[in-house]
Length: 355
Image (cartoon, rainbow, N blue to C red; front, side, top):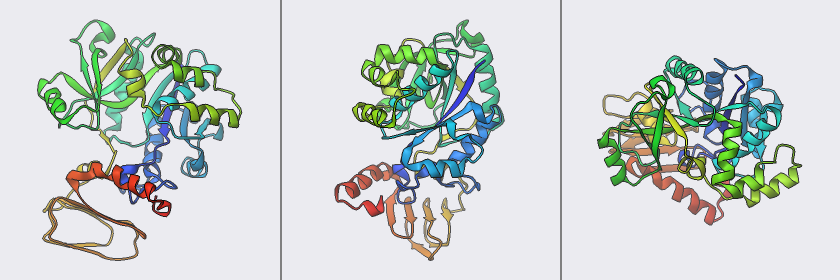
């Protein structure tokens, strides 16, 4: 079986501002204090099953040196460097076209660079079962996680009752809803027959190309034959690509989508709230990192990243306090989504030195 692990590492980590910056976004940070960046942890997870030459990383051209520094083991030929950011649909099509040109039987095991999976053994065991028990001839497969809250940042998968497909492991997807409203997410949670989309995808390269040809023809025209394009031509093609996620472009439309349920612990580290949920708190519900002292503070995350000064916080409840050498953010945890607007305002006002 020709399995190729693909790590998507081209994001800018907006919701980890001000610690995450364009020059060094979240995938290159050790936000969990493990001693490894998120990218290094993801690579190490795949390495438990795949050889270095079986792993590919799709990242940004501007981060080439960082990618090589964080993954010294990976052959440089396994790095695909995007000239421009255009979200995950163009990224996945580009690597798919690249692999299909080399290996017509290629199977892509696509994972984001920012997942935290402490139960790695259970996760890898599930993937072994998926590759051996599920019919990968035509379908696109994803891993679903049982929801614990009406989270509006995830896609939701409604699956059909068990059938003979995949020996009861792989279920046919009935509906795929990307980032629903809070009200709809609550309905999904209460129904009990929805899973969160983990953002991991498994499919043959040939299947993915057919899916793009049918459901994203504009992208297909631009990138399906992009395996050996010159850098300037590739940049032009990416400039013409719409910025759209794989979930919206393909998963919501493709007819043969299947899901396997992952019963291991899993977090998508999309922002600071996820870090707060993952790491242990003190008796007052606080997560404190760096040179931090608090008084009368509850249910808050205080992250001092500059290592240059003491942060003393008094009387806050349910807040994010994020300090770096040149920026300080104080924001209610419930308003974490506002970070996108904050970064957008910095861009609009030309404050590039803080991005």
